[in-house]
Image (cartoon, rainbow, N blue to C red):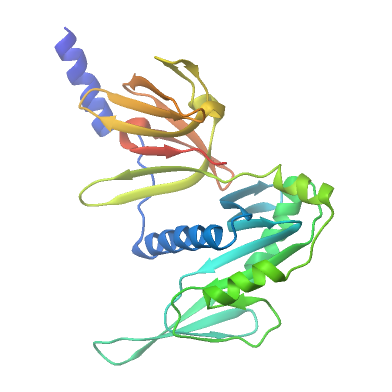
Length: 281
């Protein structure tokens, strides 16, 4: 009987339950660029506090912030754009011109203005945190051949110039406004899966009730967890739960799901189809 139960569970795990979103090549490059840049900023400015991939679910709408940086009493939103070719600013949008190395023809693509994007992010961030600090907006273009931008907005395509600005420029705010904003926002949670053929990930907010486990280290909740590695077998999973205190808790799973909030929409994903879960700071 146990054999048939395991067989039934295994097929249920394989053929039911939602998978997380596929990663496009463009998105993967963007994720790598964001991680590299934030790591380098932390190395160049050790006292910088950084939160990444912040999700803003508010009554006014949904938004995402690539990088929120706090240096002393100066708060920065950094929007990172991995755009290739020649980038030209127009009134409320950009155009990229990229040369095809095989046909020697230019490909033209219209892109949304990152400056308008940041303005909206600032509005949503203040609404989300019920705070009103001065927020310094910056756009950093990664790997573009040339930038043609004549507006007064702050942007860089050179990392050393970006670091110089972060160290020496930007408006400061009162401590209470900075603290109200910074302490009421966190990096998003992150779920990831990978196979030989594809990679999938999602930045989201995982429901607290989805991450409650009876383990060899006792009862564990989301607030105790740093990240989770999941090893899959046919009829069950092994969960290695890395805790904030440095310990590793262990438990198993057969058919559990996690519930996440993304763009103000709740979705359920099977743990059997997830390899790693990272909890936001």
